[in-house]
Length: 195
Picture 1 (cartoon, helix red, strand yellow):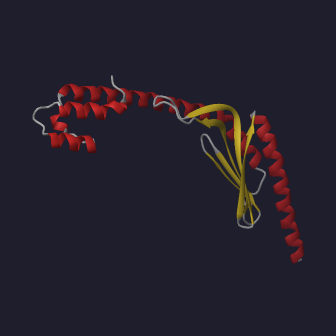
Picture 2: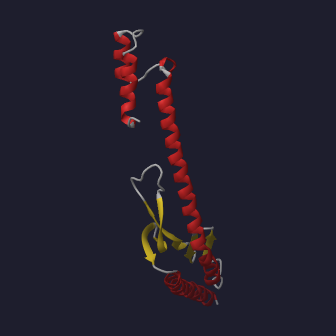
């Protein structure tokens, strides 16, 4: 089977060898790379159809691998979902927004406006330059935490990686406790200032 890049050349050569074509038509086809599809002989159409089917089969394999990747990520994240609900429950919702899906959680904290956002998901890598039958994503051990800090209209983001669920939870608990205490303190100061 010829490589993809040779198909145009094959088409032009076959058309040029057809005695029904004029020299001018062949030159035009070489320039544009366009051939009248109805004039192609069946063997070339069959070759192209086989190539299309082979490429589709590779894409189906890739889809299966990506579905498997998503299942792995959901399975890895499932135990963490319950822990995240537990560690965020003591904090008043006026200080925190939380959104948890099957494979990702987003937690935002702030006093009057958002100060901080965490996006938590199982660690993975995006693979560049993969073959058409390979997944673009590869699961990695641990968890990632995308942290975005908001201050005076600007934001700063960083990415942290944790080897285990426990190390991630320890980090989040410390951060949540510190911020919740600060927000409650500000509320108390505000109430005593009014009195």
